Image (tube, rainbow, N blue to C red; front, side, top):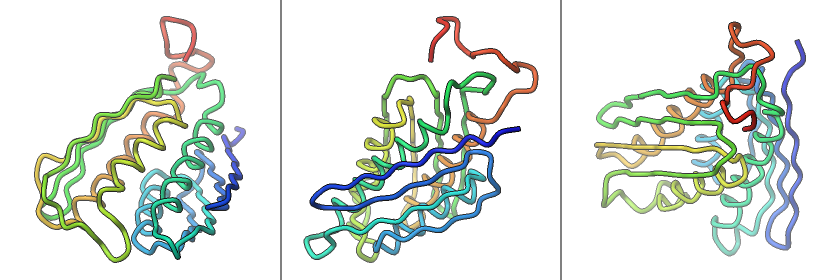
Length: 198
């Protein structure tokens, strides 16, 4: 069975990004963005999604982390979409609820071809986790969704610790994506859409 692989290189005056993803991997991850907590989150995405994931970003961190985080998410979404290919024979939908101590994340995804994000999390989260601006979590998801062309609903109904609130979102996202893009043995050769297109 052929592996579904995506590879994207994205270079601007602000960043240089390389992303490679294998949707049929075993969770082997090699990530380096220069933003420690973001690396940790991308590691969660690969390992819990069972995606082999390589991310190498060189960004203008002397300004701040925004461009590095955003451009990495854009490239990741594009590589994910590329790896999905024609989407024939996949489950299409996936959902997962993940607790992390006092925090809980509920994620539902539709590999629909129509980008849409719904995102809620507790207010008044601590603004920083190391050099990671916690307001970037939503922006990461927006950027990923726009390029991956998926519908994504992420809901964190409660949580106190900022690290836990963000991390459970990435873990739940990883599992939901894993379930959605897995091959359905009962639907081999079938596109999961009544429209005939995804």
